[in-house]
Length: 87
Image 1: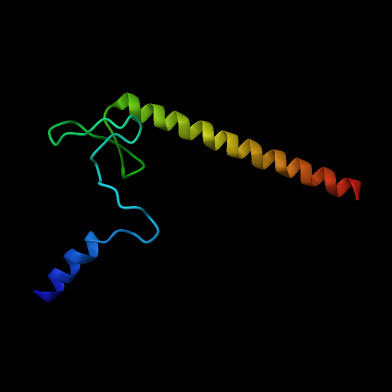
Image 2 (image 1 turned 90 degrees about the horizontal axis):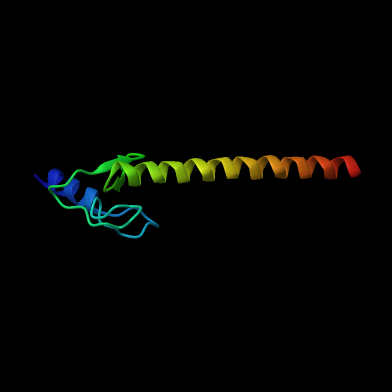
C-alpha cells in the first residue's frame, strides 16, 4: 500500500524547471476554456486545442518556424564558409 501511495505522489509532481500548468484546461493557441464535455484536439502528444482549426494553425506556425530555423542555419554556414575563404 505504501508503494501505491508513493506512486500517486510521484505523478503529481511537476517537472523541474517547468511552471505548473493545468493540463487540458484551455486551448494552447486561442486560450478558449476546454470543457469536460467538449472535444479536445491534441498535437505533439500533450498540447490541447479547442478545434481542428486551432490545431492546424499551430502546426502551420511550427512548420514556418522550422523552415526559418533551417534557413538561418544554412545562412550561418554560408557566412562561416566565406570567412574561411578570406583567411
